[in-house]
Length: 137
Image (cartoon, rainbow, N blue to C red):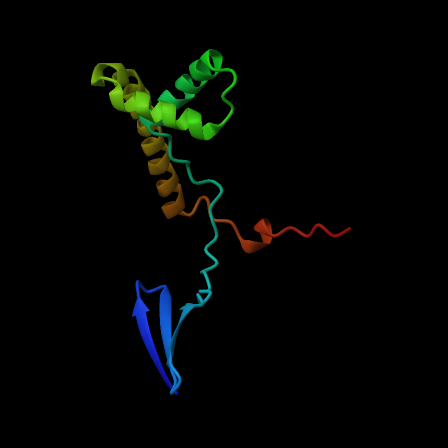
């Protein structure tokens, strides 16, 4: 009995089993090894990135679309219609959304600079005792 292993696309293996009677192909799913993720603590005080211009447009478009089409409840359909509308819009129509996104991005950059400055100076350092509170009575 001969076992041949051929690896394709890194995720699937096909094994061929040869015997004296005939050949039979067997596909085997490669088991994914669970990698231990580093227990990186996410900082709750880090500023959140602002949405892009498209998402500001989506917010306005969703309201209008639902008023015009009250029967459509699927976010998939609303998203498709919004994407088509965004693609067909001229740059002049998109400028108002780009302006909003640019303002929000400037605010984010300023907040991020302040955050990194505080982080480097050690003002935001917390000990593990502060983060882990004992909730037992």
